[in-house]
Image (cartoon, rainbow, N blue to C red):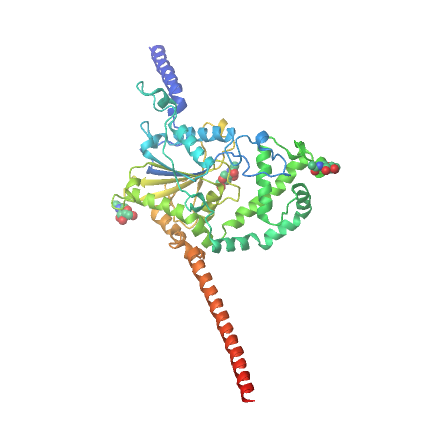
Amino acid sequence: MAYDSWNIWSFFTIILIIIDSNYGQISTPLSRSWTFNDPTILRHVQLVFRHGDRTPVYVEPPEPYYEKHKYWPQGFGQLTKQGKAKAYRLGQLLRNYYSDYLGWRFSVQEVFTQSSALDRCIETAQLIMAGILARWDISPNSEPLAKLWQPTPIETFIPADEDTLLRVNKPCPEADEIKERLMDSRRNRRLLQRHSALLDQLEQILSRHLHTIEHVSNVHENMNIMHENGYYWYKWQPESGNRSKELSSWTQESEEEILRQLKLFEMAKYRSMFDDDFIKKVRAGELLHRIGDIFKSKRSVLEPAADSDRDYRLHLYSTHDTKLAALLQTLNVWNHELVPYLGTLMFELHQSRENSSQYYVQLWYLNQTADLLEMNELRPHRLDIPGCDHEEFDEQDLMCPLDDFLILIEPFKPPQDWKHSCGVHSELTAMISVNILLLIVNLTMMFFLLMGIMYVCSCINSRSGYERLR
Ligand SMILES: *[C@@H]1O[C@H](CO)[C@@H](O)[C@H](O)[C@H]1NC(C)=O
Ligand SMILES: *[C@@H]1O[C@H](CO)[C@@H](O)[C@H](O)[C@H]1NC(C)=O
Ligand SMILES: *[C@@H]1O[C@H](CO)[C@@H](O)[C@H](O)[C@H]1NC(C)=O
């Protein structure tokens, strides 16, 4: 009898294992699952990610590997093959990670994607969406293409440089002035001094000046990308022209050491760049407030945001390391590491089960993205926002009440009047003031001319009068 029941059980277990392993690839939630014991329910998710691995934005001779057709056939500032594969994989893993929240029926209609207008960001957004939706439309009646891929709408803001939501370049003289000062700190100047021998050598090789943290940071950025692609400077053989003599003494080890030293400059750049409340407002404020407003609208049907936001369950923002760095610093949770490709900030809105009018924000940082292709699950780090009066649900689960989150981001509301706050003088005012100046100059000149003529005339007149009298 006991023997029989063991048999039946093992039979069931085997069946279960088979079902499970068939399902396993896509349906088994690998990390967090949603049970009725959880004190909160996940209500909304907003993801802010950096684009995937890219080629250098620009390489100009005599910088090694400038030959675009040979080394960067996909073009400058574009995703690499690796970057594309990783973005797609991230999409798949995100779908797994949020499988309980998104469910089987999740569709394109339920996600709102906005991207910085650069190719690499738009493509990353497309790839992540393709991964999120991959192999989920498996009903026998679907179109063959739909089983592989579905088109997804992606919003962008044009002109790209005016995009304050997902980029940080919109001209703002006031912020740039502060940034210059931050970059020129005593600490940064000491860093430049400490490495002056190396910088002299690099100036020789590149025939350009490396006087500022930003200049050197750019060299690091490019050299780092070249190493990622297996292109070492010391190995480079130019197609035409000469290779700098300096390079002949380099080895792989010395070059890697140089890269490590250069990294300090990129770190210094990111440490300094957003270290000011006005800069945070201008560079991070809009996205933070967008995220806060969407959460607010999800909390209550009484405060819906724009009509279009009501039904989305997922918001994706495809952007750059600068934007993530600005967010991390504004929320005071930056770990002083560079933001990796596809680094993702996951803003989650949770609702308490016990008291349905209580909402919480949890923030996660997915920064282990270098080996996405080998990973089976995502392991983001929870970031606890300083200054938030966190509620502790179980020993490991801190949550920031939504109201606290909203209060924390309040001081970083973006300026209402960009031009005024940033000290931008519009072209029209500039033109008018130049014209007024010219008018004043003209009038003054005419006045003196007139005076001169009158004086000369009066002299002639008086002289002729005198002569006449004589
Ligand atoms: C390369 O170097 C040689 C000698 O060092 C020099 O004569 C020649 O002009 C250089 N060519 C270029 C293209 O710089
Ligand atoms: C990712 O971020 C966490 C939290 O800031 C940090 O502890 C960890 O070292 C970071 N990992 C990588 C690979 O940068
Ligand atoms: C639920 O939370 C709201 C908002 O924090 C509070 O005003 C209310 O008293 C709470 N209700 C209960 C039953 O605890």
